[in-house]
Image (tube, helix red, strand yellow):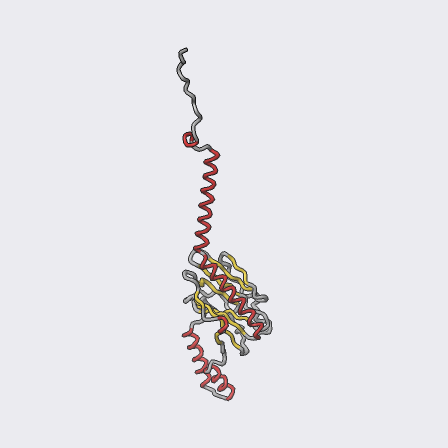
Length: 241
């Protein structure tokens, strides 16, 4: 018996030969998008980590000073040097009140300007040195008129992380936000503080801290806020003057 020619058997193409199906392509693309999204989120989180860390630390300093003013029965103050990117806490046990007239202009206090202003006030008293004015003059010259001292429990002045700056700071005794100089936020014995908006930036993103005058509560916003209405209550009429 003579065998006939062998019939070739066709085998189905392997996965590598037939390529990917539409479903497989769709799944692969979805995975690629997810991986890319995670990478972008992680990169953004790392990029703005310093900004968020600065906002958290500053919020802690505000809360610390607010609580301390109540417990120690004294006036606490948060100082912010907008040009150097520094902030610190100090206090006074003396009677102290914020002036009824709000500070004007976009520039806060500067050390050289403060010294010049103190000298001008002192010179003005030289023209008429009765007993009362002489005592005031001695007090100003010895620094007793506004005797704030560092809160050593809060540590040394703290710099903002690299790349983070104060872009704008407004507190209740200002008519408009400061963009440079030194700004102060006061906390009073009775549990009131000035309202404030402290704007931090790393150059591309902004975080604004908004402080409530009645509770000292801090809320953070991932955006700049409009300048507050200076006619709003600022806590200065609560017996703290």
